[in-house]
Length: 229
Ligand code: DC
Image 1 (cartoon, rainbow, N blue to C red):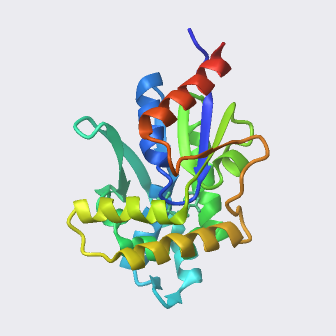
Image 2: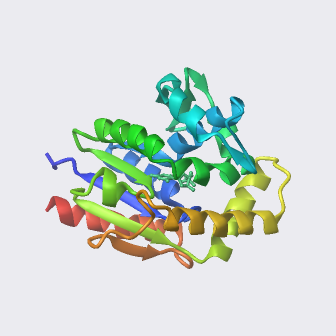
């Protein structure tokens, strides 16, 4: 039997990390963890409790309330992936809105939030057989992961993908707002003090601006097979 390895996928927002991670997890029967969903759920909690708005952040109240945040993934057979539950409530839809995307980088820059989520992520992946995507998986959460990928694509391509996703769901958004959000999150996520988004020295970079899903899937499957040989 093949050894179950740890696969860390990092990269900028809307680079298709989760799409490819889900396919890989299904093929190899690995657990998939979308760590962005965890930061989004904490952001939703902060918003619902009045701790964060576009122009304000009550850092201290959020930190004091971190013990009251319970996060859980629950696999949905029909969808084929795990949905995010915040304090036992399914928040999968609420965490994917543009409003949460506009607030999440502020919340993800708080060290106390990162400490809590990183500990939970390390616990989920302690037995291997996991595909985890995010911004700091290969650098902080699993620095010893057997396979590290770093996904990139032009901001224009990424904004178009995100715009189409939201429009397909029926959200009313403008392309300009999405492009601004993608570029702004790149900036905040890459320049924050705690665990900024950087490519791990041993990560393999995949620019998928002009790569289809199948090509990426084949390429990554080959990399996994090499690790298992
Ligand atoms: O992957 P995503 O776009 O759903 O992530 C939402 C935000 O969460 C992203 O802008 C930065 C933050 N994030 C992070 O700081 N560290 C992670 N491991 C995952 C996400």
